[in-house]
Image (cartoon, rainbow, N blue to C red; front, side, top):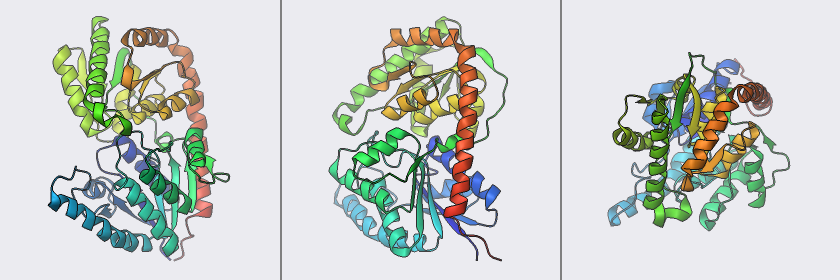
Amino acid sequence: MTVRVGVFGLLGSGNLGNDGSLEAVLGFLRAEHPQAKVSAFCGGADAVQARYGIPAMRLNWYSGEYRHASGLRSIAAKAFGKVIDVFRTAWWVRRQNVVIVPGMGVLEATLPLRPWGFPYALFLLSLCGRIGRTKVALVSVGADRIRVPATRFLVRHATRLAAYRSFRDELSRSAMADMGVRVTDDRVYPDLAFALPTPAADEDPRAVGVGVMAYYGGNDDRARGEEIYRAYVDAMTEFVRYLVGQERPVRLFIGDRIDREVVDEIVETVRSPLISAAVPGTLGELMRSMAEVGTVVGTRYHNVLCALKVGKPTIAIGYARKNDVLMADMGLAEFCQEARAVDVPRLIVQFEELQRRAPELKAELAARNEACGQQLKDQFALLSRTLIPAEVS
């Protein structure tokens, strides 16, 4: 019997963190199950197929699924697409022995999210898996409490129907318990990105990496989105100007292609030869660029995670509790701020303290990274034993 493994999610859509989680799972499958036939049901099918060499099918029949519907034609196309997607999802799921949802914040709504977008797609996946007896595994996924009733309903039932669940932190596990999911037997493992190889690079200790984000707040902030964005960008620009004034080289990072607008604005506003921008295509490329700087100030969750993974003393400008939890787990709880209200004078004080304590923090990060890597090896071994059928020639 040929083992068929599907991977599912908003993969290949421009988010480096999502694709990094996919890369970690593909690395595991290629090392431990080299004969398995892997395919993807994902947001950016063409990109996944071209980059990773696996067959991929588009997650939604309607190509404009994640654009705002304006006019009766687009509304009707979206509605029709939801019906078609039931049959497309069922057909794809039936062809798999197991479907892995690799990490990502698939059970949270910390950024603007419509219930009939990805939460609906995830619900369909789990429902089709349960009906068709295909095991669905939510592996090291992120979750948070969801207040929108329709989104909460879809996420809760998608989680309940999964055959296997693990969470990337205790916050996620507790959030699902609070939403009515029995998590007694579910385990907490680190984010899958900790399973990726750690790159080596020559470090410039004076260089600072600054990860920025096109941040407009969360689901509850839609009316104030532009105001939140403007305040965040202005604060990050002021901090970059401070770093340049200290004659420190600054490397700007992104975590999603939509973040490029923030990079362009900062470069244009500050106008200094000390500023450069890294536009990586993969999480591995992002980590290699981060390995070249001495310290990092990051916003997107996987910008922060990558910095910690390569052992950089880091400040998190977080937009959700998951950023704070990650920093606490890695021993850096005191180096956090909120993206919706960045306090630049305090950020400068935090940065100077980070510089002073850099040697001790690097040693602590090295030990915690080793522990995270071992925990993920244990999880992959568990997946092999319990979910992936033995291959029969």
